[in-house]
Image 1 (tube, rainbow, N blue to C red):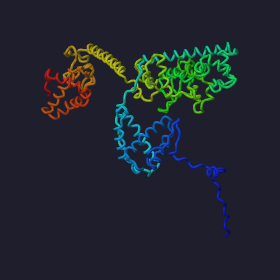
Image 2 (cartoon, rainbow, N blue to C red):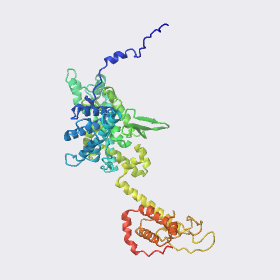
Image 3 (cartoon, one colour):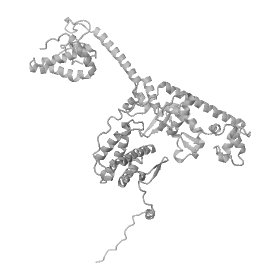
Image 4 (cartoon, one colour):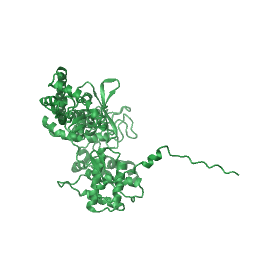
Length: 581
């Protein structure tokens, strides 16, 4: 018997894979420093035990590291709050001390924290650090089982934090219009200056020492960017330096070629007001934010991404209006086009690119906040916050239209409840109450006219039935819409209702919030309760128990306690009700 030949095992590593694996560097520790938007996030600087620090660092970069840079900054700030708690209380010496009792103590510590002025932290300010720590611990429990013991998290430690938060500031419509007019005045002035520079280039481009010559020289010999002061101090640059000083220096010459940050501010504010957008998504508009609309050549859609909602937002505008977003976006793109190749790779697709003293940058909400003070002083405006613009626009739109769905479409809200939180103001409440009062008055007028035209005799039997004239009021104090509708069991249409003047369970009943009506209802409730002790139980259950149940469980709970209390003193003035049989 011959032995089989032994085959060599097949190599299952692709060529070059083994070398690359062997030469690869060891993975970086999770607590190693990392830079996010000029901020160094280094877990090694935290005063946490080493095992706690490494576990939180791994959870942080795996769970939160995929968020936006702003979100990473916020969570890092909240995590440093937990580090201060550990440093002050000495409550954590290792992962074994991370449990539900420690979280309860952390919540209690957050509840006693105060600002520098002595005021306590808001519920949102306390819920943020706690939520960040809870997310990281839940990631450790889920992805690193056994690293920490199972934790029983405190249930809703900061209840009603959204309800008790300070109301969102809303800019009045008058101030919005004032800001928009100021933006349009600045934009018109910028356009006039750029048009004058283009005229100068066309007329005096070949005459040394003129503004047209200076702009042509920068375009052809300096790559379209005005040289720095160090370059201008070298030999051979004297004519350029002299012409630059003659026409006002960099501040006056640069806008003829490309924008500065403060010159983009009126464009940014105008676009945000027209689009009713949030400050950060609008400031991060991309250069491809304009999209055509099929079959609507005179309109274009402004499209942007809202990271918090993880959705695309859009609004359509006229493409012919010189001060609406499509025209403003096209103007900005033509103005800063020469700056795009010089911008950092991560910012080249941004719309609001400008030239700063440190190079080419993109507008940010932080930079805009620093520019607002000079803008308000120049136009005599009160200082305002960017966050108040969107609620103000939506509230003004709702007061003009009265349609929540249209406002939700403008705001790109997924749920109407979000829109209600934006437009819920005392002015809107007063307007809504006035509309409701008008509708109620019209409804009651229709009822009274309908009752006045109601027939006073049966249409089928031909027999005359005496019905009290005037308002048809039941013994329980409210009107009957139509006693001839045949609604009650055993009644026929055109015949007087068999329960007329006595049944308040009928859908034709009209109950108002007048104190006299509520006093009759309270009297009827007590009258029915007293009848339960004198009537036969079977008759009580068949005829009067359902009425008392509806009165106690459905009708009276609809009125406020203050309304019922106001009606209570009037009961003594009412006539006694007839005995129930």
